[in-house]
Length: 343
Image (cartoon, rainbow, N blue to C red):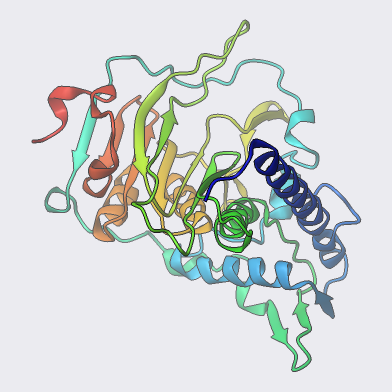
């Protein structure tokens, strides 16, 4: 079917307005920097049952689900630890008094293509002790009339930001590609968390999207250099990157970042600088990417390969490590190192 340029522009304008309204609504629901948001009202009314929206209920339910899948390392109960690290306001307003002491990755990259055969299936040390703030004490209830309620224990405060980015990306992709009248194929980017939308009535072969994996953020006093580590080809699912490289700030005489280790209640000291993970949905990709940073290189690569997850890690020694499952998704492997990609 052919559409006029005017009709196309009208549909895009309607869709754009719809998306902006959804984002504004979700901002009022999940923003932890806004004391009037639904999330912060819940955080300020603990030790009692509170009615919440279906959106907050769904994201919190999924966040709790991931706690056991990540051995307690990725948990939504870290808001107070983020406050203690100085992350009380939007990142753009936090003090950055000097350049973060991060390694510069050279153009001559050393790539290690790990496979299941050369990795040990190591276990997480004392993983059973990482039941941060007793996550099981959070109670969720869906009433017969469709209302949703949450009981948050006294002293607990939630941060859902990372989960929400992935959730929003997938929600928008589904809406644009399957709910909207025209059902556009799309790629939605929510700050590095990307979701691909495929129309239900897709007749032709799904569109393939090229997604660049950027070199970790390295700043100097004059400019920020942007280079690509790899380019991925994706026709479905989602991709997300998490790391210690960008979201950093200066607090109490040291650099802090937003990836908190729940055992120590402070920014993790990991040899994984960034992790990029592919998954069927964006929240899963986001959680697993964060999990890899918290685990460290050795355990992360073992876990990823054991579960056949496509991922690319960059460690603090400037080495790029890639799971065997990631190789089919590379569109330009020569960006890594042509001699190290097996035939």
